[in-house]
Image (tube, rainbow, N blue to C red; front, side):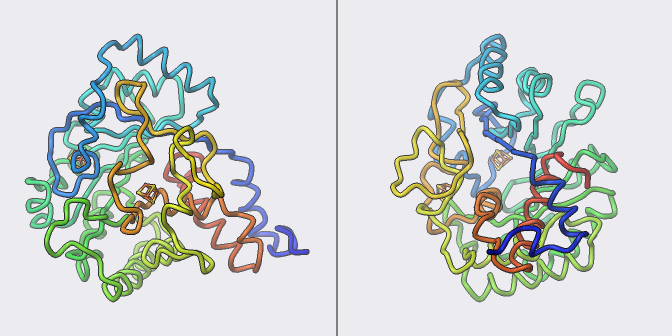
Length: 332
Ligand code: SF4
Ligand code: SF4
């Protein structure tokens, strides 16, 4: 029988040991329904999730809720929105009580006195022209000034078909401000002309992603297996989609048979009562879903399927390490 130790040499087994006991239990929280941008293709606003529930305004209710989440076993709170930094008292309530990650557009600079090591993922949608087109603003010039050299910040760079051929220039700019970057793909929830993926473009993209990882190994937090999975939507011959997705809110998950999934995962709306279907857009057709975290998690929850060949298991380890770095479970 194939086992982990029979497939790995000493060096890889050590790497495996560092992640195998992490037992990450994440959930996602809409901190607010408001944002200081309105990006074309934002999954939150394009699916009207800001109208799903009114925001809870009482900070004491947030604190009590966070306490309940902690007791439920959550050990990673992923804060999204809207723009979480518009409500720093809520961000602080999470930060004080749970390991916390905060997604942000980076326009508001958080105080490192108040949040010394809070990990921030700053959204970036391309170069200056692309950002102006999609987000109405060149956010990089502001966010990079706010966070240059911050060891607990990385860019979450959303790749679009318009980025082909330009990715390395943008990553070079991120390297120059001494920050890291993780790559993800636009799902084009608002059907913007020219932003749908075609198989041949995805194929080119995969190899461009591989190239930038080779060229900027200290800046890009990624793995070639992740590039394969996210661009092909396939893992070990299986096809990503509703029947396989690990990131469905657990109490709403009535799939049968139930696939391998994140344990007790819930995505909460900002009233602290309403649950969203999954980690991303309520209304997205799963067939078009390119959500990076869902694809990473898909690999992570399917460890057993990767105990097949040495290469498969090493691929699994690299994706798990990538996730663990992005959420501060292990250092860069
Ligand atoms: S900054 Fe983020 S939350 Fe705000 S509109 Fe853009 S994608 Fe949506
Ligand atoms: S939209 Fe994506 S993340 Fe949501 S259930 Fe479908 S496949 Fe999963």
